[in-house]
Image 1 (cartoon, rainbow, N blue to C red):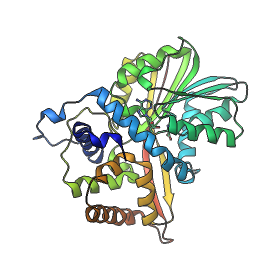
Image 2: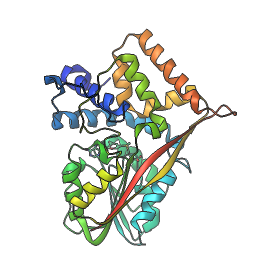
Image 3: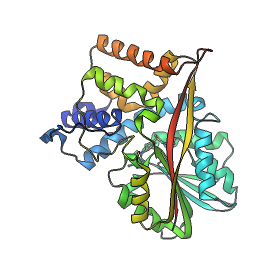
Length: 320
Ligand SMILES: C[S@@+](CC[C@H](N)C(=O)[O-])C[C@H]1O[C@@H](n2cnc3c(N)ncnc32)[C@H](O)[C@@H]1O
């Protein structure tokens, strides 16, 4: 399915990243660096691009689950509020994926405003473009670009937003510094990342897969879903990049499905790295692991049978 599976080194890298992801970045003290664990940012970037290209169909399919009122919509609304967007403002979205918080920002700034939605995956942006058309929003532009290579004139934007993306970047410090340059004087940054893995219930599948496949823990400091789950560290990075008045907080993001079985289907479709880990396993192993994952999601099942997960996102904001 994925080109990266043809390359052993790539697969090793993916395994490490997901071990870290599943364990919330906690690394066993006895973990020993081996040559296969050497981190290659370029290789990582190629793999993550491939993964997010493959995930776009899943995000389109599960739009209603991800973007529910108490889920993605609450998440985007929080960032738009923190950025204090004014009508007519210009906004850059870093890693906007299938169009969030871009579309929410586009409504806030109105037709005289401008939003540039960027992402490393053109396929995710294609979903974003379709969503913008469906919503009648003509003030969003789409740019397929690595966040670490964005290139805009200095002082082009009133605000920079980013939802659940920055932790996937090998060079967060450099990227924050760079995007600060794109902001006008007193322009605002408002971004979010996932909190600690145990507080992000949708990720309950990940420790299950790691345990079932006996994957090794990854060395610290690698990019991944929980690489920025410490608000103190985020605040430090933003301040070091030159942002003033940095503050952090949390927002609770709910994802809900009809049943545990449907939750597993959802997570398989929207978390491409998880599926990658299992794709080469024998069918019996895959079946066993997915059943265990479904059992894990039963923990979040209500009396009505529905599965409701609560997921902590950490937000941070700062002024240029
Ligand atoms: C969890 S999704 C979040 C998407 C969207 N912001 C949202 O909240 O729905 C992570 C996004 O980060 C993007 N991404 C990962 N690495 C990136 C990079 N180096 N540059 C730009 N986008 C990247 C992926 O393509 C994906 O769309």
